[in-house]
Amino acid sequence: MIRLSSSFVRTLREDPADAEVASHKLLVRAGYIRRSAPGVYTWLPLGLKVLRKVEQIVREEQDAIGGQEVLFSALQPREPYETTGRWGDFPGMFRLQDRKQDDYLLAPTHEEMFTLAVKDLFSSYKDLPTMLYQIQTKFRDEPRPRAGLLRTREFVMKDAYSFDIDDAGLDASYERQRKAYQRTFERLGLPTVICQADAGAMGGSRSEEFLHPTEVGEDTFVVSDGGYSANVEAVITAAPAPLEQAEIDALPPMHVEDTPGASTIAKLTEFSNRAFPGQGPVTETGEWTRYEMLKHLVYMLTYPDGTKEPVVLALPGDREVDPKRLEAALAPAVAEPFTDADFAAHPVLAKGYIGPEGLGLESASGIRYLVDPRVVPGTSWVAGAGAQDKHVYDLVYGRDFTADGTIEAAEVHDGDPAPDGSGPLRLTRGMEMGHIFALGRKYAEALDLKVLDANGKAAVVTMGSYGIGVTRAIAAIAELHHDEKGLVWPRAVAPADVHIMATGKDAEIFEEAERIAAALEAQGLEVLYDDRPKVSPGVKFKDAELLGLPTSVVVGRGLASGVVELRDRATGQIEEVPPEQIVDRVTEVVRAG
Image 1 (cartoon, rainbow, N blue to C red):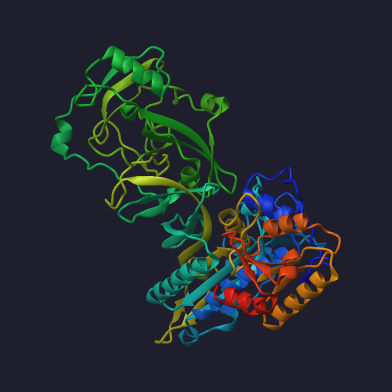
Image 2: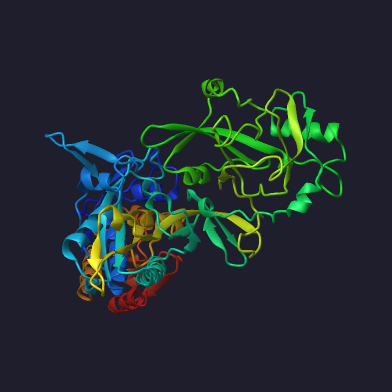
């Protein structure tokens, strides 16, 4: 039994100064967590109970699909990460040295350790498949920790790994985890949308995120009425059909025009409508739009080994670059916009009037040139002519210029067509709750994880990786389940089943509350008992609302009339029950879920 008179629980009436979102405010105010450092939190007794409840749900669903729990150390040596190329490549890694100047890290993830453990202990296809998981603290040097548990530097994560002899086995393991994730989030009371995702530095052939729709989420994903869903980083642009060569040959020739002062897309569009009215591509009006103005953006890429490379991107003028899509498309390089010094070092790039001429790896400049997927053979554009106040009109891709490749870096708009033809896309905010990857053989090959197959030949094992943010899930639950008074925990994760309050000064009130609390505990229920003798009923009620247990029992002045109150935190419903019946009634409510 948790007795508030002697528990390490203190509630606050005011929101913490650094709190931005409801979950952060309420978890701190209710005494569930306490800030230790930016992005680092201490779990207080009630918070730790919630954390253990969430962990147990995750654990049960992993066990149900044959997962075996292990626990690796958070402190890891450098060598395995250097072998896989992630020592200098993983963003936000905490690195440190011991007294002998040997390199270590605080693990942001554990692919290497799982792989090496299987390598050490398994040698035959008969040992496979196997699935291992852990629930462990991870560390990432988040540059901008914020929003309490939503973006932290230290966090608890469930990471699981499947090991199979072939791709068919991997597919089966992946599907088992996918279904386990759906059950896990249903039990946690967290609606999620399964979205196609970019594999990023993890690699692999298939990747999906479980995103919880919420306005405080830092991810943006898209859905269509026809069932398509994807993180914006993984959205594939629905490109127009290219023209046949004969159609391209019949298009008007390109021509250079003086465009004084038209150094931006907006100014160029305005100039075109003024200088060439009715000659634009919009059939009904002959209007020029921002779309036809081919925007050129220049970045300097810095690779993990320190080498640098300029790159020019071209995209329709009605689009901006989405930083996350750009990051995903160019990883592991980091992209920074060109500076004035960069432009001075590359005079072929006329700032404000850049066009495709002179670009490309095969050109004299050797500058890589990438275009948006909408730029297909036969599409016609207006672009810079490489000189001050000059632009090229009727510039046709596939006839007048080509590129080194395409890049998915432009922002996605509401109403864009889904790549599978399932209708227009809708943008939605969400929070990543889980991520599953069909890793394939990337880590097994790097760390030489092989077993003998049925023919006695060495075969590289194929792997899957499956993560759930446990501490983030608690924040998401708090975001979803609260009101203006405090938290409203789903029963599955509440720190206790019932909150007993003795509200009054008479000894018989405390005696009856004590009896009820003890009887409920004897029934196997977890009880939080507010037995504080000199605290007013008003304060106890406010604390109960803030703490957010789903069921509470109030033993107070109604006892003289032969009743106690049974309260439902979610609905606010109050039921008067005779004291001799309250234990059975509470037990019934709790076990009904």
